[in-house]
Image (cartoon, helix red, strand yellow):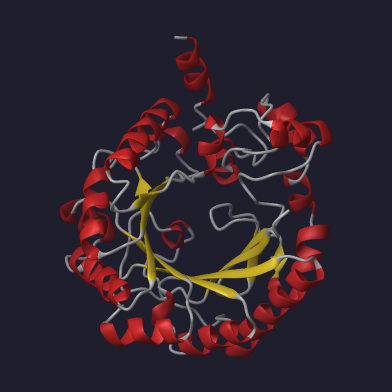
Length: 353
């Protein structure tokens, strides 16, 4: 069996040159995206990378880090962080708004062996700029994608699917192709926990299912030009029963799907740790150690309890899906509850037609 990745997403800074309406930093009160004095030092970041590399080796896994923000390119020593991760043989991805990727910056990222860059596009130019609250956001993001792609960097374009942009995914695909991106996909919107399903941007289960079917069509249409991803957690619902899944169910063994609790952590710029960047439950600090946080924390243990999750969700797909724990938490206050975006009933209904 292929080795699994031990994955952390690390916010290297809160600093950002945009003020996106759906950014999780807004939800946490940092509306201006200004880094406070609690930023992890370069040495602390290096220690985190050391811990990731050593824990992955001990557990016979592959270490991977996604460096995010704010925007990670706003941190002055970001190249030193990338260089150190490369030195420690940690696979490195960069999550950025793309506006700061000049031709020179793209060459620097290539030199540090950044495996992939994810750039956000949230619809047409007008929609994207409205969400980003800056008139320059779209054009500079496209330019950043183009600069990175010209240098041979692998760029994935990611769209956060919301009510305000759900009809613009094909526009995003077309412009991702023109800019030279290799992959494009959407991620589900995490609603405001104070509003739940009343959040005006919330996408319900039926709408998600319709978008899944539309994505299958778009994947076929653009197959020769770009990889249209079908990888968000709920896509696992469509996977038909096979011997691997059957054996996992018999052994009550996690396969894939939402990895919160199993093989990922999210680290805020001050060293606070969440199970997932969209699941704002503090489980400790990165100085507590990756191994201890994953194995000993009660929240992480609950997230690995497939029996409890099966009982809560009344679903037999927990070994290979589990829905999105963050969306369940945002809507219900219970991270073990059923994902309100789950479209399993529509798949079953369709198969019976």
